[in-house]
Length: 81
Image (tube, rainbow, N blue to C red):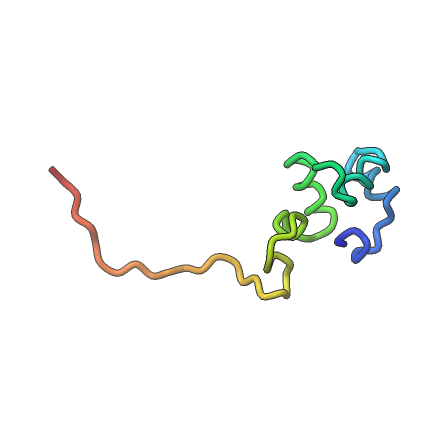
């Protein structure tokens, strides 16, 4: 759990996220779902990606996520009539 890894108490996190402790507890216990805005604020507070908070793989720095891959484009495409 990202909050506990950062050693942030439930009280402090709820205060920073501007939600009640029971609400944050319900989000963490997967009894309720936070809004997208709340997920973004949590990711900033905890220093992790929203993907990580959602449980998607390879989303936390150092766990193999390398970010987007740039692919060189060679050639051209003609457009016209």
